[in-house]
View 1 (cartoon, one colour):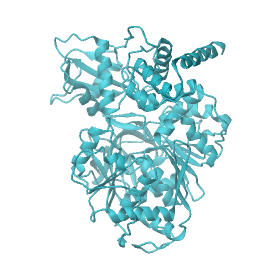
View 2 (cartoon, helix red, strand yellow):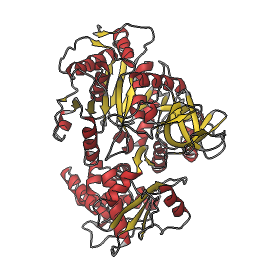
View 3 (tube, one colour):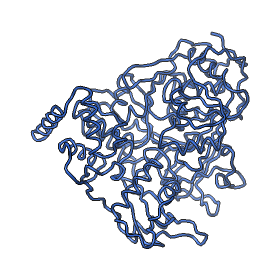
View 4 (cartoon, helix red, strand yellow):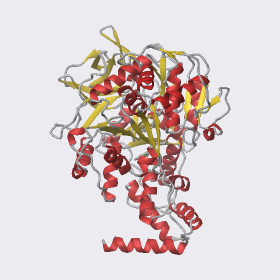
Length: 637
């Protein structure tokens, strides 16, 4: 096929755009991407079709180098829109489609970005706030673009907004050169080639799903099967089933994904799946726990999984994606997992940040990096804290803690003010702001931090307002729900204290690490333990009690009242997905995740589910019969 771009056809593409053009020209019928729909159907696109769809998008984008916001759902339309931006030279800005939970973040991105255009699905476009940018749809319109110059290596290709920031999001600038260097590094560390096979459920709006899941496979030349994160969360073993069916050699995710698979396998029979082809099981985006690796390896050893397939890696958006990675062995000693040599950068140093000097081997300090994958900075803002000088050379200050041992990196902790939950970064300031904003019952002072236990949790310390006598349990439940609704963060322990519980510097800044030290030393008020807030006679006690048990079991608490909300007991969207899947499996009836989230409590969920099931021809008597049978099966077991 003919490709209308000003580019020569080298044997080995020197850029991602060059790789797409080369594959569309030479192997147009070869499979590029697949998307596994939730109903089991599979959509496919070849290199030739992908180029045609991407060129169609590129031909409709405004000319220039102004950013384009991508608000498409996971799938081939998103892939086409992304490659359309890369072809056109317009920086792509992937972002989660709007929802009640992401609305504030989206408004912040729009205010910071002022995009030249927005590419989105028609049904999403109707939900967008008013703004001046034109709205385009990714579906082909028959547009034939003029010849497009290949973007320069130093021009901006992608702006990655950091995943946790809501009120003041920061867009990391990544050039075409940054992307090319990093996908080459991923290819080398993972040992990928054209015979590799992969499946990816990671969101394409963040670095791991975007660069690792979408850009790297096309660079190397192997097909990628995509599935939605919701598909994985609702049935984690569906990911493993895809690995078995496709003979996948390389796939992975954050640490929590492996924990979720193990939890699911302990509740359900493990299907007859073969994991023996899985050679690279990468684990990144949050601290890698040795216990998680051992548990997963033991759980799925009978399915052919080998623990040596694990490849813990370290990276961050400001370094494009990967920094280091190394295959793991159960024989590796110590609780801190070795993340290997930092081959994706020119130099990695462990530094005493307060002095700006190198630290010797084995000494913990802040990780600093320099090299071709490192960002030039943030969109539309200066940040003096992002870079530092070491021996007269500029380095990226990651804010992460680690140590070097014989040239290999051991990451000991994340940035002190970043909270990582389910692979997503959340800024402590955002969590604290969500708590104290417009709440007369608390003082405008709070501290959020993450514990370093084998099962890390986020702790929130809040100061009560003087003369306020609100019930502790009620206040803690309300604060948990507020944080979850505004930020998506699931709070573990809530500590309520009098004024001056949270220490500050002389300039008035919250001292989160000192607060954490005092909490761990038992010098702060004990965490509030929520009680049962249920009351009244349930309309359908059996169903409500069953659902309350599901809420408690999934959220790992002793019990849950029928009127307690999921947010109150520390639940989040991941837990809601688990509840939906478990109830659906137990009852053999449809349980939409959206219903669990909207209902919130076991009592309301029971009412909404019974109404839904009645419409499907399953009345209350049949539901009661199924519950009775289920209880009998449990007693029999």
